[in-house]
Image 1 (cartoon, helix red, strand yellow):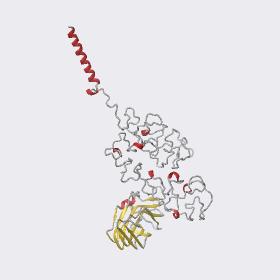
Image 2 (cartoon, rainbow, N blue to C red):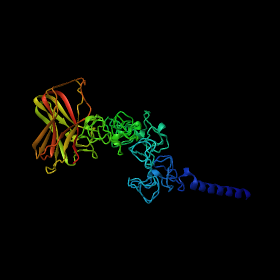
Image 3 (cartoon, rainbow, N blue to C red):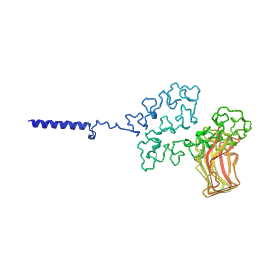
Image 4 (tube, rainbow, N blue to C red):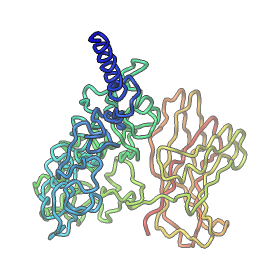
Length: 473
């Protein structure tokens, strides 16, 4: 009997243990196992259950206002009740938003100081000690990319990160080329393919290039193209190779809103401050490109953008067309619409096979509505001459003419370029730099402008139009 009892007790114990395993052993398929406990949807190494931004990679878990919502996904980082986008002190709590001097920077963070000379007050500069006028901040943590040791917040320091601007805590690199799979083909993660990106290693979706040197502003050590590095330039955003600073305040005369003395170095009747060419007489202060540097001393090109003195005609109100003119064999125009796309990196291209007697091609911007007259004192074209792979010959050629039309009838012309002889052999002698050709508008009303490139003899020539620009009314 004792033996039977012992056997029954052993059987009962076995059944109890089996039941426990069925309920609690993860390998048994039981439904009590919290399978989502380690879910990490943003792959930043922090489980969602404890991640303060579970959908945005932020391995460092920064939370400036301590509200439990990480900085990278917190609409109000400083917790003062005003969203970051409208907060005049986004990193310092200031619910009153007081701004006594009306400069757009709240009193709490307005230091009236700019240590890195990038034009951003230290109180709101996301890298106050590092020049970064664009204020790029890929991970949105309030620390600018230029000074953030882990720009994508994936827990891997930039120096060791194979995708420093795209979160990839796993650092997968299938082809072992040093560029992580997460950003292969677009290493800075700015949606611009590497082949087209003017800053391969720093995000710049807008591809802004102020001095048109082919290097994007965010990675250009000389933004204004005046030969002086940004850090040492007393006007880093306005070209001033001479670095003249009449009042000795550390701000170059060309961008100094303060006063200087009444000296008139060039004797043109305009005091050195605010003379836009203080060393060369120019009493009229002509400045065709509106960059603050007078035409007589302006050697860095031009500016054509929505906020400058010259503004581009765009496809919203205008349409572009182009064709060969005169006696011209193999003449055509590629992509005329790219002359009005507000992007100087693209272009309409005139192709001249063999132009004789008077032949060539043109590109025109025509108002979609004839009643939409162009109200401008000056019209200009951003152009360039790519070098020839073999031979380019121009005889009594290179006659560049700007023509004005109203209701499809020509009302005025202006020759803005020409030459007796031009020879380009294997690219030697070519000028591929972009330049600005402009003409004053006629007294007559006009709604269309066109640029002709033609001459007596033109062989194997290309001419590009990057933008059509007009002076602001």
